[in-house]
Length: 95
Image 1: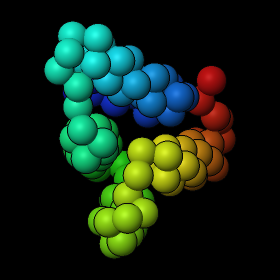
Image 2: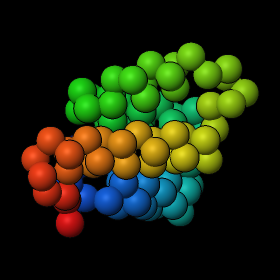
Image 3: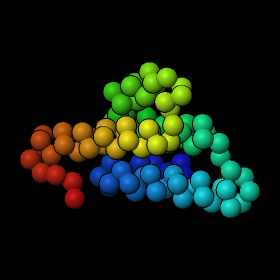
């Protein structure tokens, strides 16, 4: 769940990694709280240094809007913007 994030892969791979970890912890009767899930996912993405604007925008969201569903939408968009910027600067796109 806390593995490094690979931006060359679809963001859905990262989201599935988090959700699989949550399911495993729940099955082991040691569930994560929603705040812990978001904090772990945020830290992994923040530590890449690739999403500084998205991370800043996330921190500015009111706490009631900082849900897992909102996190997935916000960072899926940020990931797509990152991929688009990479495609524009290199002339190719991630597969």
